[in-house]
Amino acid sequence: MFVFMTKRFLLLLISCLFISALSPAQISIQGKVQDEFYQNLPSTTVRLLTTDSLLIKGTYTNQYGEFVFSEISSGNYLLCCSFLGYQLRYVSISVNQKDTVIPPIQLLPTSHELSEVFVEAPSYIRKSDRVLVIPKQNQIAHASTGYDLLYNLMIPGISVDQRKGSVSSFGRSVTLYINGRKADSREIKNIRSKDILNVQYHDVPTGKYSGDFASINIVTKDYDQGGYVAIDGKQTIGFKRGDYNLAAKKSAGNWDFTFFAGYQMEDHSGISEAREETFHFQERNITRRSQTLDSHFKQDQQYYQFFISHIRDKRTLLGRISLFANATPINHQIRENIYANTSIKKQIEDLNSNQKSLMPQLYLYGSFNITEKQTLDLSFRGNYARNNYERDYTEG
Image (cartoon, rainbow, N blue to C red; front, top):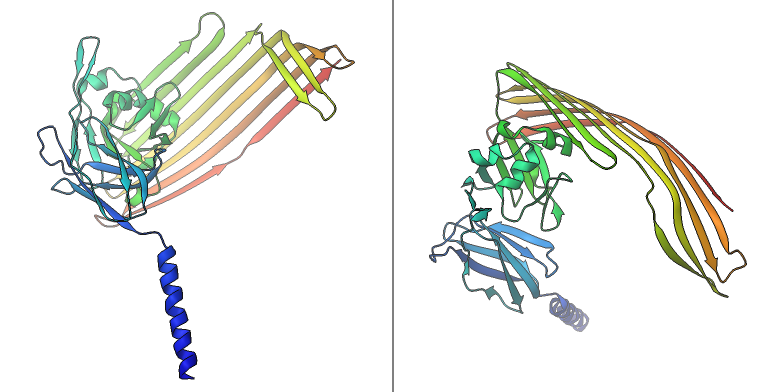
């Protein structure tokens, strides 16, 4: 019995050693970030990335400018260090089977000079979990939308596409909020830059933002009374394409009423397209050369959004009703198809399609401050969609 238990114990011990030997070594990466004068930079954002720039972990430097990443496997990585007012810095590192201490990383200050006009950097305050960015007056004056202002702030590591209405960081989407509430692109587009009090950038999100890769919370000013109406439009010359928007807001005490509306249209014809395709079959290949003979495309999009909100010190209530409509009544193309290596030499292709969709939406949101450090957020979203699509295709 003793011999059996001894063998069993030895077998268990050998198995544990074998599993331990197969497990990848978990090591740490330590370093320090300094400024151009070799002074330590506390609260610097440090990201550990793969060689393909995919995020693994993120952290901040402590009061001595030091950072550490624990439980890291051996391999090659990128370190990305960012601090507002300084240039973004990437450092390639190679981690072996032991803890790695890298030399101090130095960041250099940045300034932007465009067309002989010096653009002053925004004021910023590093908090424990975010960067508070206070826009300068000239940045507000040269921005007409929320996206314009985010672009003017030049936050390190943030890319803003004003035309598409998108914000990204390291190739991934940044989630946008207004006063702690998740906002869509139309809200960001229609917000007036002069109504923005500050911008909170969460480069390593925590708390209510912890599910995001990166977050930006736009904090707006509170008005007891007043309102505004804003209209903007964009018309393409040469063919019919337009984008027209209306925004209106009224404040009365703790109540805010906001209305957004927009109309986009496009109507053009005569677009020509030539292409060549090869179809591979077991017995032979068939080539088709296509040339557009005639085309006509017409589309229009509309949206309407109405907001009502009630804000007090310890709670925020908001309701939103939206309606989105999209129609393509005409999408007509006539093509000439010429075939090679087949008995059919020439065909005329006629494609005619149309579609329309209608989607109403209801959104309810409530935020309640339970304590100074605890907040309860509740939201409800309801959608209904009705879509219709017709397609008629003939070839002969």
